Image (cartoon, rainbow, N blue to C red):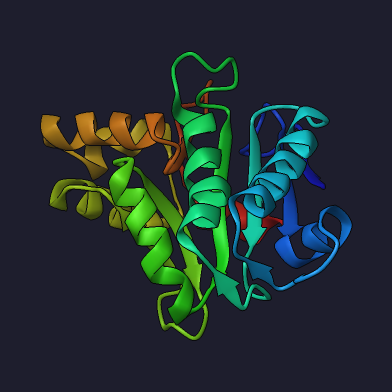
Length: 206
């Protein structure tokens, strides 16, 4: 876990931790360390990540590294991607709006099962692809306006709260900003109103 302390543009504090899924598999599952091929295996990984979340302060950013996962099936994608995202956005969850995820190390064989479960649950995720000129992408269920607004924040990294109306002069754009924040696809500073791309936050912890 790495922490951005008080005094910067992330006050109050935001915690971040990186999760190597292969490492969790080695500690949670007896074999097939690079294979996520059964729902119980995926559930074991998800529960391990959720256990880490319970031990840190909120808000938190979790960087879930899939780069060493050589096989990923649909049931595991549902557990490790969709259910983690649902944990962060469901209104009944006490941590709703406080946990953010980036799924890192995506390779070609990861995309189909992840996209399938995201669309099935009407979710979107910030992903970091391997070997792509624009490694951070928005993946899953989203409108063209959501893609446009997310891309503006992504390209800038941070939009100060005082300049949000300038960056997004149209009311529909600002409503879309609200929706993206609720969906955990960007971080809005609870006091200053600054908008942060999740990739911008992730780079602070490299």
